[in-house]
Length: 306
Image 1 (cartoon, rainbow, N blue to C red):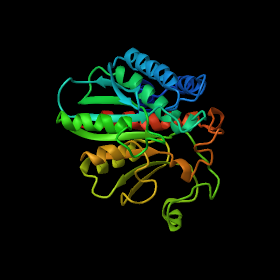
Image 2: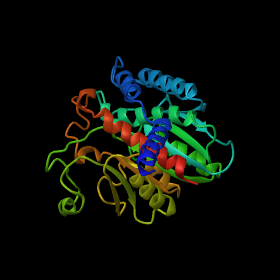
Image 3: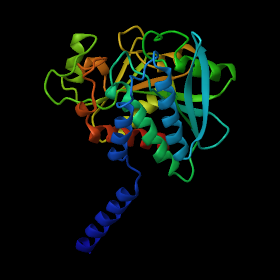
Image 4: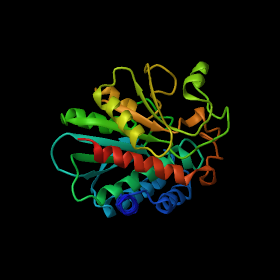
C-alpha cells in the first residue's frame, strides 16, 4: 500500500506544480530586448521614445486582458504619460503594483528599470490567465521617476498617487518594482547603507529585498511575510526609518506622501549593482531565471491575499 501511495502522491504534486502559473523567462527577455533597444535612451529628453515605450506597454497590458487607460500630464510644455491596466473587480479596494519605464541619462537601463517593467508585463499576462481575482489590481507603468524629476511632483507615481487621493480611492497597498534582475553569489558583493547590516543580512548579493519604512502598516507586514514564504529564491525583509539612504529611492515614496502603505521590491540597486545608472547596465548582466522567480513569488503573494 505504501509503495503504491507514494508514487501516486508524487504524481499528484507534480501535476499541481505543472498547472501553477509561472513566469516565462523568454517573454521577460523579449520585453527587455525591446526596452534596451530603443533608438534613443528612454529618458525625459526624448518624449517620442517614451511615447513609443508607453504604447508598447499599453499594447502588452491590453493583450494580457487588462482594462487599460493613460494618465497624461504636462511638464515644461511636453506631454508625458502613465499607463494603467486594471484586473479583477471594477469596484472595491485595490492593490497598486507599479514600475517606472524611464531611465537616467543616456543608458540602456536593463536592470534600472527594464526588469521592473518586464516583471510588470509578465505579471499582467499571468493575472490575465486567472478566472477570478480576489480584489482589483491596478498595474501602473510610470514615467519620469529618474532625475531631474526624482522627488518632485512631476514624477509619474506622484501624479498617480495624487489622483487616487483626490478621488478618495480605497487602496489596500502599493508595491514598487525597482530593479529585480541583478544577482551576485560572491562574498562581499552586497553593500549596505550601514556597514554592520551585513552581519544581519549577509554579504552575498543573491536575494530580493522587501523594503519598507517603520510604521508602514499591516499591508507591508503581510506582503513581506507572504512574499518570503512564496519565493523560490532568498528574500530579506528590511524595515528602517524613512531617512535611511535607499529606503525611499523609488516610486513607493509618493504613496507614503499621500498616506498609503507601500513597499519596495528590489535587488537593492546600487548597493549591489555597480552598473547602476551606467552605460554598462545591459541585458547580458541579468539573471533571467531569478527574475522569473521574483515574478512567481509576486503572483503567488497577490493571489494568496484576501
